[in-house]
Length: 637
Image (tube, rainbow, N blue to C red; front, side, top):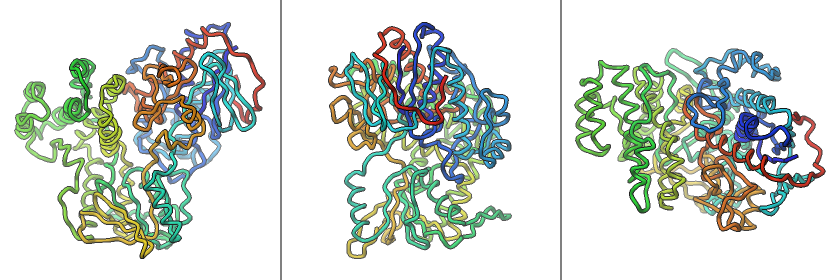
């Protein structure tokens, strides 16, 4: 009998288990029994981030129809495609999908029963879906594979490359042939800047919260009426504001003009700023109005091969971004020309003939777009999108109105199908991830480009355009601004601790000379995992022993199957250790995906599952051992 230990039972571990079930019939002979041990202190399926036990105010930033854990016809994988329902399809009639188990919480039951495909579900609804996906994956395993869940934290992993791997738990040791680290989103200990701010807060009795996961934070230290600075304007900001307003008893009341906010009196005064100084663009609330664009067209395998054919180091912005930008533009203009012909002055075939032949930065391309698309609001301008407040110098009151106008316009545009070209651009943006893993696997990007362009600018820009909140969150933000609960600070926000006043001083070049003195500071963005400062005990121990490689703060793995690259093996892939997820240089951050997008995470899961099953079926099993008692609710086949 062989043994596989999977450390981390959230969506990534669940997705791997689904792929193991799909590939087992082909790759794991019936005379090779396999024990799978899942280790996670949180419930399997949802794991830490998507567990049920979190505020019902916290929502997904994806529509229910855009969330799936299953492969489909778009998947370019070696293993079998096993279609399954999206969250929206499952929620409609969960009793029709085996193995059925009623959702325990009546509030979540009611939400699922009324969930429309274009609704943005609560995270607790997603937790229920992930719980079912996990149970289905277990049920789909062949009879000679068993699964046991250990509601525990793995403390360490040890063992020689040619021998048993020892996974230390709090009450015993698992001995395994193969170990997979599907650890999900991880935190890091504070960097020097955050340590300095924490020390300042401690000296002066102030509140300081470093980057953290919204579902884990304790905001009780922020007093009613306190001047609070939130640095960051993305999804963490949205979650924090919800918990500091509605979570403290405030109410949003519909009015003929939109929403008003009725404070409870327990809210702080929230000052918010960031590098851009504006919130993430909200998600669109409509579907394409024309036929889908045939993606990819310019950033496909052949185009990437042509770039890679040139010798020497590469840079994302210089060598690949022109192709990526042109692909996004193709998705945008394809939808505009096919769905809104009255707003263009050329036939699509003529436009495309010229567009095909021109480079993205060519002046002739800008002239073509200007001639074909009369209204500048229908043109794609990345610089204006990425730097919306550049050059503006306003008074604080002028900035409040400017941001309200900006947020209102963004909300209205993203809710209006007349602007469905934005959705065309969004879908093209998603398609870029089809080739990015190939580029990263070559190792040809310079270290500077990986750190500042790929992990810095690109993922930030992608999140700003594509991973924003539901539209109703922007309506709420407008209501909070009008009620004076939220105040905008501007772009390029700077925070300085002032020892004389014991306050955090916030300034922005958008409002020259204006200074906000706050007694509380929250870093309103998610933690970035850095291997040298990891909070995970397993990774910390392996790094201390010199058994891990690091790339831009991430765990370095073989990009074809996720095996850890081990310095003690001359940087070769470890034969018994695999890692998948956002803590690795695989960079497929999402464990679930939009249907029909050939998701990189699903491709990684399939490749890893096939590699694991092949090795497990061919190797001699390690010696069986006495295992610790599993949790009271193990899932055993």
